[in-house]
Every structure is written in structure tokens, then in C-alpha cells.
Amino acid sequence: MYKRINTINNVFSFTIINDDLSYTTTNGQIFIEGKEIPSFFNSTCYPMNLQGKLFLWDSSGQGAILDKKPELIKNAIGIEGRYVVTRLLKKENGKYIKDYNLYDHIKKENLFTQPINKKIFIHNGLFLTHPFPKISISRVSETGTPLWQFAFSQLAPVYWDANTPDTLEKIIGVAHGNVWLTTDGGRLVAININTGELTKVFTRSEEEQIHGYECTHGLGWVYLNPNDSHIHCMSSFHYYKINTKTLSVDESYQYKELEPNGIGQFGIRQTLLQGDYFTYLGVKQGESQIRWAGIYDYKLRKTVWLHCVISDEEVKKGNRLNINHPPKMAGNKLYIKDVKHNLHVFEKEALS
Image 1 (cartoon, rainbow, N blue to C red):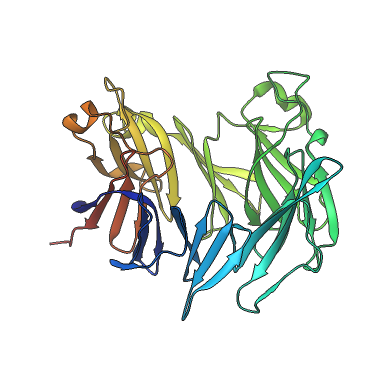
Image 2: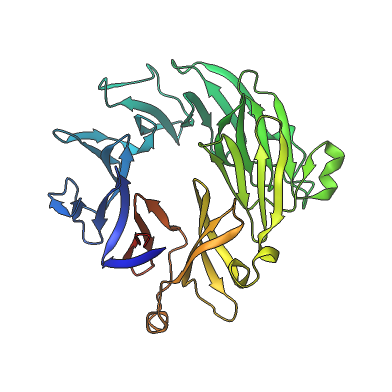
């Protein structure tokens, strides 16, 4: 399905814009579609896709948008939708306070007239925030006015310790009137986008059914697929499809039982949902390092591509695949990064 065509050395970070590769190197160089451009920073930066434009972010708090001419942005920490997230530190009563805002690179202005002291996220046009530590989630208006707040203390404590309250792990997305998120207690939670009231909780603990939570065998890596607006999950053994409209499990199966000689040979270390596929990184039985990458078709219920990316010789030198970079499909290319900062580029083979 895919054949390796290139390995690019010294890649620090990369992104794909309109199916074209842009990346930065470990020594601070910036490459866009194979062409090097002058760096704006004194250190290595991260490239990101800002709605078809290249956004470069330096961990020291500087950003740059590359369009017709570069636009430098101070206090940048990342992007959300069409906005650059900025953060300003200020000291009050001996403590540092973090104030956040969203910079609209089209209008060239901040979205909020007053900054917000919580981290800001955007899903389906909704502005969501959470504090640190992540004990609650809020929705705010386009002017920054709070609309509701959901405190995770409303949930039962985590099932392994009655004295430990649950907290937010990750906001998954918005679908059919609910914000979907995962918690550090291993739950999948739906919250009404208009009222902030609890809609549904999925849990991996059978004991938590006494709270009215629906039990699964473990959700693992959880994604909201924009193609069908439903939740798709892949754990170490199970696949789940959760219907965000009916709030029920539409499909579940143990993929390792269906394919013992394929994906069943591996301990899955990371996945990424991409359309009808999960790409994954795995450790093969009898091996100790992450060397293998695969593509799993959850509709066909089988692995459609499997490859040993890291050779025995490279493993002996301490190399392995980077767990923070699951295989990324873009156009007819597939990109896989290892811990030695090599980017392995694969191309889809033409059908004969």
C-alpha cells in the first residue's frame, strides 16, 4: 500500500499544509515545500497549520504567520481554529497569573477586549475554557462572558480512590448538542453545550454503573470523526463506535481476536484516527522497542498496511519510533518520525 521513498534527517517538528510538507530541523532551519527560508527565531521552532497558512511557534513565546509577508506575534503559545492563542504572565500578590487571548490574524486584532485567566479552546465555533488544575470546564461568549461552568466534582470520585476527584484530560469535540471530553478517571463525558448540564458518562469500571454511567471495556484513544460526527475509540484490544446522537454504543468488537496474526501480534503504543482508518505504532511480541507502524481499517476490521520501519541495526543504536508522532496520512504520502529525529516518508503505490 505504501512504499518508503525518502528519509529526512534532523527533523525537529513538521506539519502538512495542502498536502505539502513543512518542517524545522534540530539546528533551527525552516523548510517549506523543500525550500529553506530564513529563521525568525534564535531557537528551534514548531510549524503548525493555521487554516492553510504556516504558523511558526517558538517555545520562548514568539510566533510568526507566513503569508504574503511574515507577521510576528508576541506571547504566542499555539493556535485554535483561525486564531493564535496568546498568553501573558503577570504577578499579583507574589503569584504569577496567566491571562489568555485569541489573536485574529485576519482582522489583526484580539478577539476578547479583556483577556481570560483560563486556557481557551475552540470546537465547532464554541469557545471553551478550563483552568489549571483542570477541575472544571466553561463555555464563554465571543466577548469572553462566561455562559456556564461544569465542575468535575459533580462526577463520582475516580473509581480507584474515593478521595480523589476526577479532572479533565482532553476536550474531544462538539457534536449533536454536546461537548465530548475524556477525564483522568478514564471516562468519556458529554455535557450539554447550552446549559452545561451533564448528559452522559461512559466508564470502564463496572462498579460505576451504580451512578448511572454506561460501562465499556476501556476506551483507549478517543476521537470525534468529523466525517460522521461520532466518537471512535481504539484501546489495547477493543474498538468502539459511539453514536453522539443516540448516546449509545453502535459498534464494538475485539480487533485482536479478529486478526491474531495481524494487529493481534502487537502491543499498541499510539493511534491516530484518519477517516476510515486508525494508524498505529506497535511493539511486536518478542520485541522490546516500537519498530512497527500499521494502518487499520475499522470498517473492514483488518490491517491494510503493516511495516517494520526501524531496522535491527538502528534498534541496536538506540533508535525507535516516536510515540508522540503516530503515522500521519496526507494526500498520497505517509509520514512517520523516530526518536533520532528522522522523518520517514512513504508514498502510496499506484494500483496496477
